[in-house]
Length: 284
Image (cartoon, rainbow, N blue to C red; front, side, top):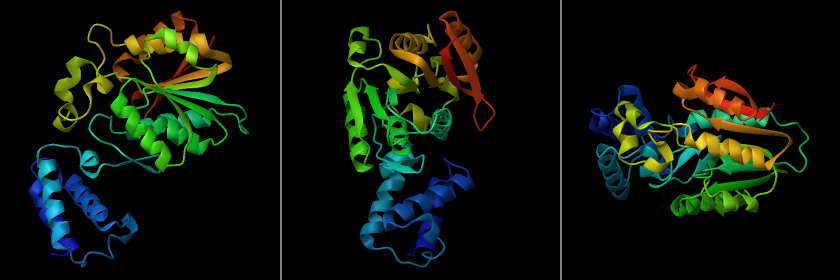
């Protein structure tokens, strides 16, 4: 079969899981990846034939999708802030909302930047830390991660994308290890913030494959990570330091109040969907 016919076949196979627009997008991504082509080539390659080996690989990939495995894990890659990142089971798949967080951090930089120290807490694939380093070349970027599997992938991404990152295998809640960190200008984090009661609203592709420890917060304390991040910020701040986090819109107001009680001033920012998805804090 050629590309056009194969795309139709893929769409028909996965139509029970995705709507028409998503089916078409997934088929395109699978075929472009298989042919090592770019989106701009899509129209040109419609009549290109596929080898038996390519067809066999696509069959395997479609079967994985039918098992509800995320496309990014099937392809072992995800795009974030214009960069291709390696992703595998055990590391959270980067989201567009987190790209918005990165842009907000950059917008709050005072250029030209000199001696800027940035920490990404819970780096996962390294998407935040690496994107910031690629955009702010002179910054010294630290990335903290407790999962050895995720840290290994983040290190691979840093090498592949030419970003010098200081990786630290460490748990945020181990305060004794905070002394290993320098004083910081920016702390950035996309911590676990989904509450267990929200599981029923989530797609099986997320629940069954992405790491629960990177998604869910303890049911009894949905702001657990944010209190720890604020404490770290207060210990490692400079005179004009800022703390940036992605947040659960359900707890935006409550989090803002908690941080204010800890002596911080806060600003909440809406994401592309109009949800309270990001928060910035600095010393009052």
